[in-house]
Length: 367
Image (cartoon, rainbow, N blue to C red; front, top):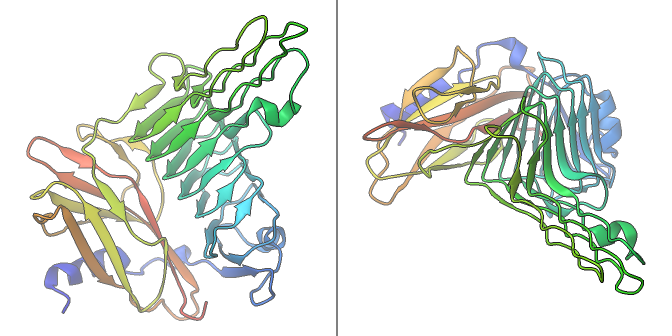
């Protein structure tokens, strides 16, 4: 039985009110059971704000320019993409991508909001960094891994000077939020011993190039790459984090976590799991758009713009895990999908702590 609290939560979170939130859904499947057999063709045909469900993709990458999409990998195992590139995203658009392995991410000149969830953990094989963010207003990465290329993979071994390793994440002139992310700089290539050579430098785990950038991190693990060796000298070990003072800002929040699926069919039960300290009271915030602002005097970043709904949930039990079941109502007639972004604020004895954002795409049951 669904309690009154959960019924109220349902109304607050999933009340479908604004027709402008509806988006078309396109299925990508190389086997021919979807709307497109090519990911590139689906991206080209989709309108700003549409949803792509990728079940069995071709090896092509994702290249977007001037529009935003929600792209969710439903395949198993995860689809591997050589490149995820988003450029010139307008301020009114959003790009969400969930559940892909990748070799390289490039985000360039994006004024809109970008949310990357549950991606990565493959080795880059080229480029200055596994993930690079340049001149972007609002980028959030959640549970995403990055690995810079090793110098040897570029040179195949050199006779003299070893090549430098690539960075895991390179940020310039951008605002970036990182939750539970991992970054490993690439290793420097060995230089020659005879004739005398010098080893390459290891890449940085996280490198920020300028004082205008702001990178906020929570429970992230960045490690510099190892140095290369050589007969006349060794390279430098890469830095775990490297940037001008004040540009890399650890969030001093309590170690609380959210867990949920990124997609659900209408008329099904959605399970939201919240891990925290027993006795904390979660406040669920829900909106239809992304945002980014330091949450003062609370600790954390607010990722939802006003207006958003607020709903108090039951306190976290003694087990430290609260599971909230929510039934998803049918979508309005002729609408194929709706998108929501959620964030929990946990009320502790001495403060309030914001968790990571989590997205949910509700799609028609026919997909």
